[in-house]
Image 1 (cartoon, rainbow, N blue to C red):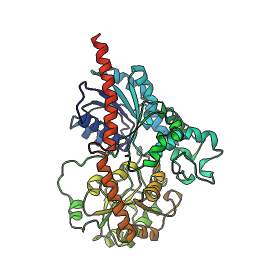
Image 2: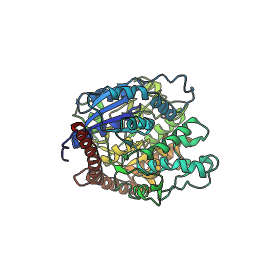
Image 3: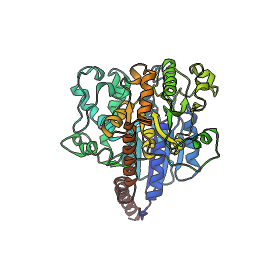
Image 4: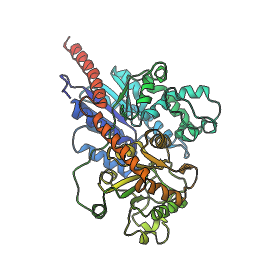
Length: 485
């Protein structure tokens, strides 16, 4: 891409949590390396996640973007102990607005454009005060965006709880959303979580544009509906920029360890990687069934295991990640580690996911279907076993299994009850050794190639970001002209 004659300055805002911060940081890097922007990233930190702190520190080292941590505001008097994660995030971002406004005012170079994530839409008013362009970055996919901007309409026409509806929820021009697949804020219409989500759905279309972490070939029907004034375009009035897939890039190879020494010895595409993200946890009973299902499958595996919890997989990165490295405290079935010693590796708490997914021996990903993880799987050509737990992951799993054909999933949602060992065994074998898995593997590699094309010169995401840059260039020239008067 051509360097701009006048250098624009983008301010990006990220809410707490590694899953939110990673795509914002990667978007910032693209703006710097492809478009010659100056980029300042404001990260509202939670200081609750070691992964989050590591990501912020590593982002500061290459000096591509200026990363400024905003201290987390004290919201203890504003939310109760039972507040949902989405509520906590929205309140944190709302209360951080004064600090953000002050920090932007202190910048040496005035910003040209502000880009906020889903939880930061209330900060768009700061861009209006500064008379700069304002955009929303949806780090998820176009179907999630469609539901988010249509939720104010659904709020008016749907009676009762969404989860109690007998028919799927129609979204003009898009695949309907089944009641059991609705996003977490829609589970209880009387909870603050729902009203916060409703508000974001009203604010997104008020921006000057929406950047979405997908690409044209992955979701052509949904993107067309969002742009059609006779369909979703009548509520999604802002232009859509497909800027995906935005995923982390592999860093320099580190020193070998036991895990990668073991992976190096396994046959190509023979290992299933099992991990449920930074906030995904399982009950004790489900942990047992998963362990025995992996054992029964007789397939090689790498499993990132976390201590079991009473509350299954709510995505609470504010509390997730506790527990030590002693696997005896993780309540795994008696004898499991001994019996699977030659076929599997069990890793406590955390493992380098991107490095594992990119390893040639990995041929399947048993995943919670968070969108960051989904894109990392797709861009490495790895088919998935969908195990959605929270947020929009149930929508993701449905899209992957039924619309795009990149995953298999259980008959019963993991959030609705315990999935048994026999079904887990069958899902693993369907992907890893049966003919169905070969078809999914071919499909995901085809989608991987389309993702690569999207970022080549002339590709859909390349062109979308170029168009955004041209709009910013016009603003820069107008400002320069005003200064010269």
